[in-house]
Image (tube, rainbow, N blue to C red; front, side, top):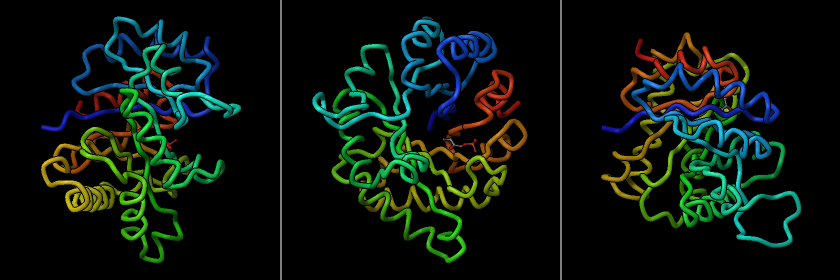
Length: 248
Ligand code: 13P
């Protein structure tokens, strides 16, 4: 009943020309997709990739958005600037932004509300570090990220949540399908407590972290996992298409 969503996070990869070449190769490969397909591209790729995606079933996403509508925020991009180019999704609070750029649950929360107010669908990232997992703090960490990061949200099913264990990102170490399923089940249970059971049943929760053509089938077969947020494997059209067709 929850439509799966496979999203690529290109991170800081692909110039506009490279991005267009990638989506031109991708479009025919995923035209028959049964799930939602999204590419989250660098800001400077947005105009060209947006034009290249016109008329296709691939939706466009950004990798961050500022919380103010406009003003003295050098280097930032507003939701209306994204909307102007047909952006529909935006990643918020990726662990790389939390780790390297001082993103906190508070700024994640502000960005999420700004995105929703503008009609963008936030893909809010949460996840624990290796040390937190090894010391048994995973659930406590996720609990805080949900309560603080999603504070003030009326209906959690308006967003997409990406569970990305930090230790699985770009490391080739994937959480086992059981581990990912169990943790996403915990996230859903917490959403039921904080928001409402009905919207917790509806919210789509992705897994992210070294998901690839080989392991996607097993991960996606898990009942709690509604999709993937794909880094490295989204940079090659064939690999990404494989993940989009995870049940083949
Ligand atoms: P990798 O798929 O490269 O591990 O990256 C995952 C990720 O961070 C997606 O946002």
